[in-house]
Length: 170
Image (cartoon, rainbow, N blue to C red):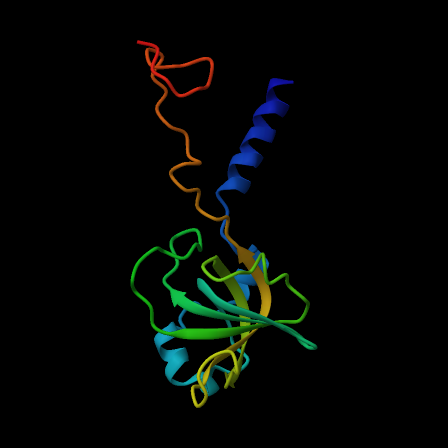
């Protein structure tokens, strides 16, 4: 019985510490392609599977699926976009199905694995700008960070007011 509980606990621990993109898709990705190079020459990498992430800028539903404009950010060890001011530019993700624009809203962090499809001149942003276009194979939408008000606060038992009126007990 203890052995089963230990095994289940180990599986949950390993699952909780896994990379953002599944291992079978991640193993197909070319990790040597940097976003700098892709941004400059997207046609050279056409057909290559890459993993990038960042912050969603805009989402637009179309008849062909959903377009997501993402501001690229470096990924950490687990594949989550880092919260830095560093960015090498923007890219467009085309997902084949409808995605809820409320869930994939501006400011949310996303990691994606996709095939480079060339360039795209989206009507989502200014005319005349072309961005790398990636056809989505897998998406990971990260949880929103909790505000300080939602995070656990220090609870002082000497100042606790059981009535909930916010008064100090002493």
